[in-house]
Image 1 (tube, rainbow, N blue to C red):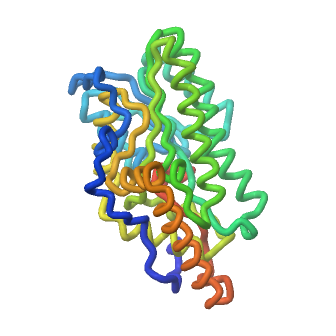
Image 2: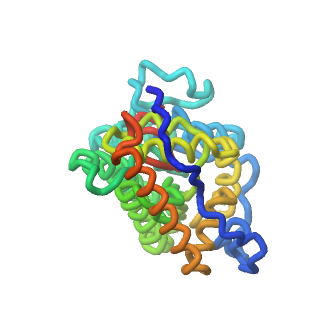
Length: 328
Protein backbone atom coordinates (compact mmCIF):
# COMPACT_ATOMS: atom_id res chain seq x y z
CA UNK A 1 0.00 0.00 0.00
CA UNK A 2 1.36 3.41 -0.93
CA UNK A 3 1.24 5.94 1.89
CA UNK A 4 -0.38 9.29 1.10
CA UNK A 5 1.53 12.54 1.07
CA UNK A 6 1.41 14.64 4.22
CA UNK A 7 1.57 18.43 4.35
CA UNK A 8 4.22 18.78 7.02
CA UNK A 9 7.22 21.13 7.20
CA UNK A 10 10.57 19.85 6.04
CA UNK A 11 11.97 17.90 8.99
CA UNK A 12 15.20 15.98 9.28
CA UNK A 13 17.40 14.27 11.79
CA UNK A 14 19.26 16.65 14.12
CA UNK A 15 22.19 18.44 12.50
CA UNK A 16 24.24 19.89 15.32
CA UNK A 17 27.45 20.38 13.33
CA UNK A 18 29.53 17.96 15.40
CA UNK A 19 31.82 16.83 12.62
CA UNK A 20 34.82 18.66 14.10
CA UNK A 21 34.10 17.90 17.74
CA UNK A 22 37.07 15.90 19.13
CA UNK A 23 35.54 12.77 20.58
CA UNK A 24 38.13 9.98 20.62
CA UNK A 25 36.62 6.57 20.00
CA UNK A 26 33.33 7.95 18.71
CA UNK A 27 34.43 9.33 15.36
CA UNK A 28 33.64 6.11 13.53
CA UNK A 29 32.30 2.87 15.00
CA UNK A 30 32.19 3.45 18.78
CA UNK A 31 33.29 1.17 21.60
CA UNK A 32 35.82 -0.71 19.47
CA UNK A 33 38.28 -2.47 21.73
CA UNK A 34 41.91 -1.87 20.87
CA UNK A 35 42.50 -5.59 21.36
CA UNK A 36 39.80 -6.61 18.86
CA UNK A 37 40.93 -8.16 15.62
CA UNK A 38 38.82 -8.63 12.50
CA UNK A 39 37.60 -12.08 11.56
CA UNK A 40 39.05 -13.77 8.46
CA UNK A 41 37.43 -12.71 5.21
CA UNK A 42 36.21 -16.28 4.59
CA UNK A 43 34.72 -17.42 7.89
CA UNK A 44 32.40 -20.35 7.13
CA UNK A 45 30.11 -19.36 9.99
CA UNK A 46 26.66 -20.85 10.44
CA UNK A 47 24.20 -17.94 10.47
CA UNK A 48 20.44 -17.56 11.03
CA UNK A 49 18.84 -14.23 10.02
CA UNK A 50 15.21 -13.49 10.96
CA UNK A 51 13.21 -11.16 8.73
CA UNK A 52 15.80 -12.05 6.13
CA UNK A 53 13.78 -11.99 2.91
CA UNK A 54 13.98 -8.21 2.43
CA UNK A 55 15.44 -4.97 3.70
CA UNK A 56 18.38 -5.01 6.09
CA UNK A 57 17.85 -8.70 6.84
CA UNK A 58 18.31 -9.63 3.19
CA UNK A 59 21.31 -7.32 2.85
CA UNK A 60 22.95 -8.92 5.89
CA UNK A 61 22.18 -12.45 4.70
CA UNK A 62 23.76 -11.62 1.35
CA UNK A 63 26.83 -10.11 3.03
CA UNK A 64 27.33 -13.23 5.15
CA UNK A 65 27.03 -15.43 2.07
CA UNK A 66 29.63 -13.32 0.27
CA UNK A 67 32.02 -14.06 3.15
CA UNK A 68 31.61 -17.77 2.58
CA UNK A 69 29.23 -18.23 5.50
CA UNK A 70 26.32 -20.67 5.50
CA UNK A 71 23.02 -18.87 5.99
CA UNK A 72 19.46 -19.72 6.94
CA UNK A 73 17.06 -16.96 5.94
CA UNK A 74 13.93 -17.02 8.12
CA UNK A 75 10.76 -15.12 7.27
CA UNK A 76 6.98 -15.43 7.31
CA UNK A 77 6.40 -17.09 3.94
CA UNK A 78 5.83 -20.86 4.20
CA UNK A 79 8.95 -22.97 3.88
CA UNK A 80 7.64 -24.55 0.66
CA UNK A 81 6.86 -21.10 -0.80
CA UNK A 82 10.36 -19.64 -0.68
CA UNK A 83 10.41 -15.90 -1.53
CA UNK A 84 12.12 -15.10 -4.82
CA UNK A 85 14.31 -12.53 -3.05
CA UNK A 86 16.13 -15.16 -0.98
CA UNK A 87 19.58 -15.92 -2.47
CA UNK A 88 19.82 -19.31 -4.14
CA UNK A 89 22.69 -20.45 -1.91
CA UNK A 90 20.80 -19.71 1.33
CA UNK A 91 18.59 -22.17 3.17
CA UNK A 92 15.05 -20.86 3.74
CA UNK A 93 12.84 -21.45 6.77
CA UNK A 94 9.42 -20.19 7.84
CA UNK A 95 9.67 -18.41 11.21
CA UNK A 96 7.12 -16.15 12.86
CA UNK A 97 9.07 -14.60 15.74
CA UNK A 98 5.85 -14.41 17.78
CA UNK A 99 5.59 -18.21 17.91
CA UNK A 100 7.46 -20.20 20.54
CA UNK A 101 6.76 -23.39 18.58
CA UNK A 102 8.29 -21.97 15.40
CA UNK A 103 11.40 -20.86 17.29
CA UNK A 104 11.80 -24.41 18.59
CA UNK A 105 11.32 -25.73 15.06
CA UNK A 106 14.05 -23.35 13.86
CA UNK A 107 16.44 -24.66 16.48
CA UNK A 108 15.63 -28.24 15.49
CA UNK A 109 16.34 -27.39 11.84
CA UNK A 110 19.67 -25.79 12.75
CA UNK A 111 20.68 -28.87 14.75
CA UNK A 112 19.59 -31.14 11.89
CA UNK A 113 21.52 -29.47 9.08
CA UNK A 114 24.51 -27.99 10.94
CA UNK A 115 24.66 -29.40 14.46
CA UNK A 116 25.10 -25.89 15.86
CA UNK A 117 24.98 -22.15 15.15
CA UNK A 118 27.61 -19.42 15.16
CA UNK A 119 25.58 -16.24 14.60
CA UNK A 120 21.93 -15.46 15.36
CA UNK A 121 20.67 -12.20 13.83
CA UNK A 122 17.41 -11.13 15.51
CA UNK A 123 16.37 -8.72 12.79
CA UNK A 124 12.61 -9.13 12.18
CA UNK A 125 10.52 -6.13 13.21
CA UNK A 126 7.85 -3.65 12.24
CA UNK A 127 7.67 0.13 12.03
CA UNK A 128 5.29 2.01 14.27
CA UNK A 129 4.80 5.36 15.94
CA UNK A 130 2.34 8.14 16.49
CA UNK A 131 1.23 10.54 19.18
CA UNK A 132 0.63 8.81 22.48
CA UNK A 133 -3.11 9.52 22.59
CA UNK A 134 -3.56 7.98 19.12
CA UNK A 135 -1.75 4.70 19.73
CA UNK A 136 -4.14 1.89 20.54
CA UNK A 137 -3.73 -0.99 22.96
CA UNK A 138 -3.41 -3.29 19.95
CA UNK A 139 -0.62 -1.10 18.54
CA UNK A 140 1.36 -1.52 21.75
CA UNK A 141 0.72 -5.25 22.01
CA UNK A 142 1.77 -5.84 18.40
CA UNK A 143 5.06 -3.97 18.53
CA UNK A 144 6.02 -5.44 21.90
CA UNK A 145 5.23 -8.97 20.69
CA UNK A 146 7.27 -8.63 17.50
CA UNK A 147 10.07 -6.13 18.10
CA UNK A 148 10.79 -6.90 21.77
CA UNK A 149 9.53 -10.37 22.63
CA UNK A 150 10.62 -11.64 19.21
CA UNK A 151 14.21 -10.76 20.15
CA UNK A 152 13.82 -12.24 23.64
CA UNK A 153 12.44 -15.49 22.22
CA UNK A 154 15.34 -15.79 19.80
CA UNK A 155 17.91 -15.23 22.53
CA UNK A 156 16.18 -17.67 24.88
CA UNK A 157 16.05 -20.32 22.16
CA UNK A 158 19.70 -20.25 21.08
CA UNK A 159 21.66 -19.11 24.14
CA UNK A 160 21.67 -22.65 25.61
CA UNK A 161 23.22 -23.89 22.35
CA UNK A 162 25.84 -21.13 22.42
CA UNK A 163 26.71 -21.90 26.04
CA UNK A 164 27.06 -25.61 25.30
CA UNK A 165 29.36 -24.78 22.36
CA UNK A 166 31.36 -22.24 24.35
CA UNK A 167 30.96 -19.83 21.44
CA UNK A 168 28.40 -17.88 19.45
CA UNK A 169 27.38 -14.35 18.50
CA UNK A 170 24.00 -12.76 19.24
CA UNK A 171 23.24 -9.86 16.89
CA UNK A 172 20.12 -7.84 17.76
CA UNK A 173 18.76 -5.20 15.38
CA UNK A 174 17.59 -2.19 17.37
CA UNK A 175 17.72 1.31 15.89
CA UNK A 176 19.07 4.77 16.51
CA UNK A 177 15.58 5.19 18.01
CA UNK A 178 16.76 2.94 20.82
CA UNK A 179 19.32 5.59 21.79
CA UNK A 180 17.79 8.86 20.55
CA UNK A 181 14.08 9.38 21.22
CA UNK A 182 12.29 11.85 18.91
CA UNK A 183 8.68 12.98 19.30
CA UNK A 184 5.76 10.93 17.91
CA UNK A 185 7.66 7.65 18.24
CA UNK A 186 7.00 6.55 21.82
CA UNK A 187 6.02 2.93 21.12
CA UNK A 188 8.87 2.40 18.69
CA UNK A 189 11.56 4.05 20.83
CA UNK A 190 10.34 2.12 23.89
CA UNK A 191 10.82 -1.32 22.33
CA UNK A 192 14.06 -0.41 20.55
CA UNK A 193 15.52 1.00 23.78
CA UNK A 194 14.53 -2.28 25.42
CA UNK A 195 16.41 -4.22 22.72
CA UNK A 196 19.52 -2.15 23.46
CA UNK A 197 19.08 -2.84 27.18
CA UNK A 198 18.57 -6.58 26.68
CA UNK A 199 21.68 -6.69 24.52
CA UNK A 200 23.84 -4.90 27.08
CA UNK A 201 22.65 -7.11 29.90
CA UNK A 202 23.34 -10.24 27.84
CA UNK A 203 26.75 -8.87 26.92
CA UNK A 204 27.87 -9.08 30.55
CA UNK A 205 25.90 -12.26 31.24
CA UNK A 206 27.27 -14.28 28.32
CA UNK A 207 30.87 -13.10 28.04
CA UNK A 208 32.02 -15.65 30.66
CA UNK A 209 30.66 -18.38 28.37
CA UNK A 210 32.54 -17.16 25.30
CA UNK A 211 29.41 -15.70 23.67
CA UNK A 212 29.58 -12.29 21.95
CA UNK A 213 26.70 -9.81 21.70
CA UNK A 214 26.20 -6.92 19.27
CA UNK A 215 23.33 -4.47 18.89
CA UNK A 216 22.73 -2.62 15.61
CA UNK A 217 21.46 0.97 15.79
CA UNK A 218 21.16 2.39 12.27
CA UNK A 219 19.51 5.67 11.43
CA UNK A 220 16.95 6.08 8.64
CA UNK A 221 17.82 4.32 5.39
CA UNK A 222 15.92 3.35 2.26
CA UNK A 223 13.95 0.17 2.93
CA UNK A 224 10.48 -1.30 2.63
CA UNK A 225 9.82 -0.72 6.34
CA UNK A 226 7.10 1.82 5.60
CA UNK A 227 4.95 -1.06 4.35
CA UNK A 228 4.52 -2.24 7.96
CA UNK A 229 3.32 1.13 9.33
CA UNK A 230 0.15 1.04 11.40
CA UNK A 231 -2.81 3.32 10.76
CA UNK A 232 -3.37 4.99 14.11
CA UNK A 233 -1.73 8.38 13.44
CA UNK A 234 -1.64 9.41 9.75
CA UNK A 235 0.41 12.57 10.30
CA UNK A 236 3.19 10.68 12.05
CA UNK A 237 3.31 8.16 9.22
CA UNK A 238 3.96 10.94 6.71
CA UNK A 239 6.80 12.28 8.85
CA UNK A 240 8.42 8.83 9.08
CA UNK A 241 7.98 8.09 5.39
CA UNK A 242 9.70 11.33 4.45
CA UNK A 243 12.72 10.47 6.59
CA UNK A 244 12.98 7.00 5.07
CA UNK A 245 12.49 8.15 1.47
CA UNK A 246 14.96 11.04 1.72
CA UNK A 247 17.82 8.95 3.08
CA UNK A 248 20.90 8.78 0.89
CA UNK A 249 21.76 5.27 2.10
CA UNK A 250 20.34 1.88 1.26
CA UNK A 251 20.30 -1.42 3.14
CA UNK A 252 23.40 -2.75 1.35
CA UNK A 253 25.48 0.21 2.54
CA UNK A 254 24.27 -0.23 6.11
CA UNK A 255 24.98 -3.97 5.97
CA UNK A 256 28.55 -3.35 4.79
CA UNK A 257 29.24 -1.15 7.82
CA UNK A 258 27.53 -3.66 10.11
CA UNK A 259 29.81 -6.43 8.88
CA UNK A 260 32.85 -4.33 9.76
CA UNK A 261 31.57 -4.02 13.31
CA UNK A 262 30.71 -7.70 13.56
CA UNK A 263 34.16 -8.70 12.30
CA UNK A 264 35.61 -6.80 15.26
CA UNK A 265 33.00 -8.30 17.65
CA UNK A 266 31.92 -4.78 18.50
CA UNK A 267 29.00 -4.34 20.89
CA UNK A 268 27.27 -1.09 19.82
CA UNK A 269 27.27 -0.68 16.06
CA UNK A 270 26.20 2.71 14.68
CA UNK A 271 26.63 1.99 10.97
CA UNK A 272 26.00 5.41 9.40
CA UNK A 273 27.12 9.02 9.93
CA UNK A 274 23.67 10.32 10.98
CA UNK A 275 23.43 7.72 13.73
CA UNK A 276 26.91 8.49 15.06
CA UNK A 277 26.34 12.25 14.93
CA UNK A 278 22.98 12.12 16.72
CA UNK A 279 24.29 9.78 19.41
CA UNK A 280 27.31 12.03 20.02
CA UNK A 281 25.01 15.03 20.30
CA UNK A 282 22.83 13.43 22.96
CA UNK A 283 25.83 12.31 25.02
CA UNK A 284 28.10 15.33 24.73
CA UNK A 285 25.88 18.31 23.83
CA UNK A 286 22.69 17.62 25.80
CA UNK A 287 21.41 21.20 25.74
CA UNK A 288 21.76 21.46 21.95
CA UNK A 289 20.20 18.02 21.55
CA UNK A 290 17.23 19.00 23.74
CA UNK A 291 16.66 22.20 21.72
CA UNK A 292 16.70 20.21 18.49
CA UNK A 293 14.22 17.62 19.73
CA UNK A 294 11.93 20.27 21.19
CA UNK A 295 12.05 22.12 17.86
CA UNK A 296 10.97 18.94 16.08
CA UNK A 297 8.06 18.56 18.49
CA UNK A 298 7.02 22.18 18.03
CA UNK A 299 7.11 21.94 14.23
CA UNK A 300 5.04 18.77 14.27
CA UNK A 301 2.53 20.29 16.69
CA UNK A 302 2.18 23.42 14.57
CA UNK A 303 1.68 21.41 11.39
CA UNK A 304 -0.96 19.14 12.88
CA UNK A 305 -2.83 22.07 14.44
CA UNK A 306 -2.95 23.69 11.02
CA UNK A 307 -4.48 20.55 9.50
CA UNK A 308 -6.89 19.84 12.33
CA UNK A 309 -4.65 17.20 13.87
CA UNK A 310 -4.69 14.77 10.94
CA UNK A 311 -2.54 15.63 7.95
CA UNK A 312 -3.10 12.38 6.05
CA UNK A 313 -5.54 9.53 5.63
CA UNK A 314 -3.58 6.40 6.43
CA UNK A 315 -0.54 4.99 8.27
CA UNK A 316 1.75 5.78 11.22
CA UNK A 317 5.24 5.05 12.38
CA UNK A 318 8.93 5.52 11.93
CA UNK A 319 12.34 4.11 11.38
CA UNK A 320 15.41 2.57 10.34
CA UNK A 321 16.63 -0.73 11.57
CA UNK A 322 14.96 -4.00 10.64
CA UNK A 323 12.52 -5.37 8.15
CA UNK A 324 8.79 -5.69 8.36
CA UNK A 325 7.23 -8.30 10.61
CA UNK A 326 7.01 -10.47 7.54
CA UNK A 327 10.41 -9.36 6.34
CA UNK A 328 8.71 -7.87 3.31
